Image 1 (cartoon, helix red, strand yellow):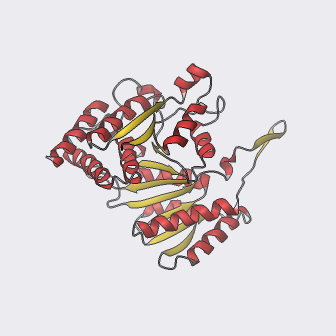
Image 2 (cartoon, helix red, strand yellow):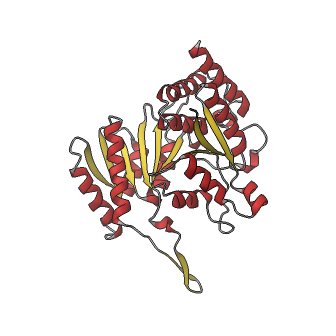
Image 3 (cartoon, helix red, strand yellow):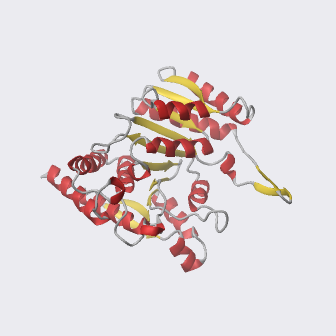
Length: 337
């Protein structure tokens, strides 16, 4: 039986990188029944809502989605589709593997981190109001339930993948109750997993240490806002957001997506780098139990980068999105023959 997967292309460069990722997944010969749904600007134009109910219903039915980037208006407009999606489907764990890739020159070599971010609360709860004119307030909501389950997920992933250590980031010296509750929950779960090393790092110190030398870190566990910032910082260690996959995991559904923006300035020009979404698709294949296909996709991406002949502009080349797609597929088929 084929796997049923919801495909949400998004907007901006989303349709281009989503088409490339889909073609590469199809080239693995894993049977996928793609269910296409629209979100972002195309959905606004069609029905006035950037995240139609049909998208949520489809992901609930399939349990898995591959999603391209969606534009989020700054300072106005509609609420972030990504935030709404995570809340509606309770996708509580953001998982971002950050690994050095061959042929990509960066300051550090052999970076191998996993950023685990709590995805549903904290300062991203969206509870804001104006107290008086000129004074606004936002609420940071932290619950024991959410802290406990994200800590459980981090330690589960560490044990499953043979990781050596979980580092919990915080600012409990200032936010003693909210970040204090996060740390209390992490400590309880750490005590139940004595085979995995555990440490606590103040968030600003963590950022400094990552910039100086990321090698001491392995799995980094963070609440929502800290995780959003640190995951992008960590992406910069290996070449930027165009090189890093992402997953949002819940109990009943999982959404795999590139973590970069929709880049409307280059949309429709066949210039976008599809690698982040292709690697996200590999994470999706592994989630579906297709581990061999996932490994082959990752190997084909690595081979394409190692060759250095087909690179998009952000990597110093002149290739287009479809050129990268074709090169990855060629390596897939060459490895199989």
